Image (cartoon, rainbow, N blue to C red; front, side, top):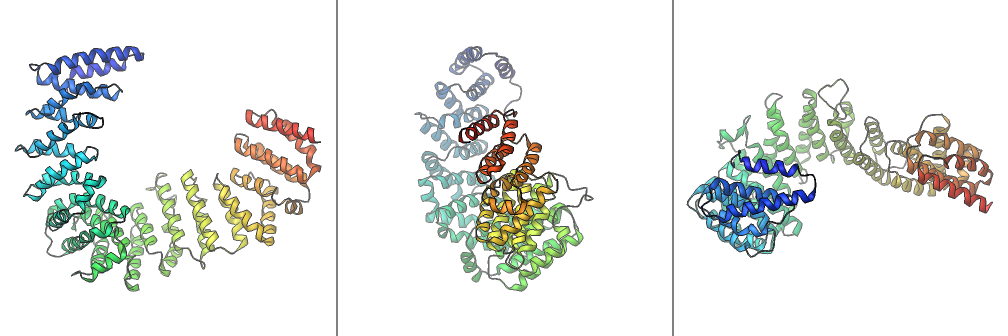
Amino acid sequence: MLQAGYRGLTNFVTEIRDCKTYESEKERVSKELEKVESVLSDTKSKQYDRIKSVLKLLYIQTLGYNISSFEKYCINMASSRNYLEKRAGYLTFPVFLNSETSFQDRIVGILQADIVSSDSNIKWLALSTLSDLAPTETVCKAIIDSVVPLLTQKSSRELCQRAFCCLSLLCWTELGWKFLTSQEASNLLQKFLGEKDPGLLTSLMSFLRQLISVAKDAGQLHLFTYVLTELFQVLTWLLSPSFEASSYSYYEIPCPFLLSDVWKLIGQFPASFVMEIDKHSRSPISNSFLKCLSYIQKGDISNRRNATFSISLEALKVVSKLPQSQDLFTHTLTVVMSLISEDVRPTTRYFVLRALKELSFLPETWTSIQRNFHILLPFAPSETECTIQDEPLWFDQSIELLSAVCNAHNVEQVIDHMLRITSLFSLSSSQQSLIMEKCLNITQSFLRDEEKLVAVVVVLSSVCQDVEELVKLLLTKLEISQSLRRKCFAKFYELLTRGVLLEAGLLHVLLLVFPTYPSHSYDVFHNAEDVVMLLYRQMRCHENLIDLQSCFLTFLMKWIQYFPETTDVVLKIFKRYATHQDLEVQNRACEYMRFISKVG
């Protein structure tokens, strides 16, 4: 680390923070820049003062001031043979590389020279700095010319780990990608994937995740099938009895982070690619999966089991896409469900939810959910280890799982479960969007029961604020089904007349649906004025919801077009709204009154 006690720097920062105006700050900065230039231009100045001056420059730059005139001094610092001065100069590289200057080539040249330095500390510093720079063609050319040769030589693990970070930049430029898709890069990656060094492989996985992700987005994943072949070999090696690396084991699980990363990378490839490699693999992927699954069953309820969850889940994501035998998946379901009978911790039950989603294609999965609904879904109040912070994540996983297992045969039960879960939470906007999206998709795809549709509308509009899509669906269904209209308006009549305060979302639905089918509203309520007064009583309890109040005023204008006899009642309501606390509502009410007076 840089020296902690740069007193002059601390005093300068304090003085800047004490400035009351921009002019006083600018004056203080200008004075300090003159002092910094004096120190950096003096070849006899102390190392301590030079480093402190560079740090002041960086602070001044964060304030928005231009320090480009100091480039040559900072580059001279980076060229120093002294490690501390060099490191201080390196800190300024990102600032100057992001600007259009003639010093960029010199900066890259300094890094390239330090990469081949005999001093390992300077070499590591140069590699770390290079990996933090923006991926430009100049930087990528430097990586290909200087970093790649290091990897082809016999280098230490620490150096290779830093070099892999540099290689990640090659994914983002044309020159870099051309190299990564070359035979030279293929040979290099195969060489390191064949290394029996867990630490080195763990570092390599980070680069490969970036590489495979970019290749997948570019539609060039087929160029890296050799990586998939090597990953199978790494997987076989890690799970073989001959694997010996006690320092990389965690509760007797071999390299859990590496093992999880290998499965994640395999999962990035299409199932057809995985199947083709699996045909020629010495150990079938199903055996590797069962080996990983067995880690869950061994040992007590401890951190060991937590470490296996990520491995097993990533492995399950891969295997569930392959045409494996029904017995394999049934066995997996049995193992997963056995966890909740002995281990009710949040982490375990969260894993169970995610695993069941991957097994949603099994008929037995839905049966298991029904039998264990009270355990799988929200925590009971007596389970003190669950906090309110756990609920959002739990809610999302529960809804996603139920949506995944839904079909034409169980749609009504699934919706019942969803609505039940929804009633247990105070939903955030993102959760409202999720439950609305899933329920609408299920309703449109599978639901045929009209009474259930009405229940869905009532519950969703009671817990969600944005009901636009819900109203669109309801109006579409109402248009083609007269029986649904009768059931729907009968339910609305029941809700309005029982004297219970309705949620804003549900009131929005009523205000939009009633004017669309005024005759049905009249048939149910038998009195158009009753509809107005019942809704007005509800509105008085939601006076702070301006959008809802505006929607109500618009409803009243539409209502008197169909039922002129309600004009007097509506005018009285408009007069009350003319003194509303919100100016927009006042103006709208006054505008409507003037319009009615002019027309009438």
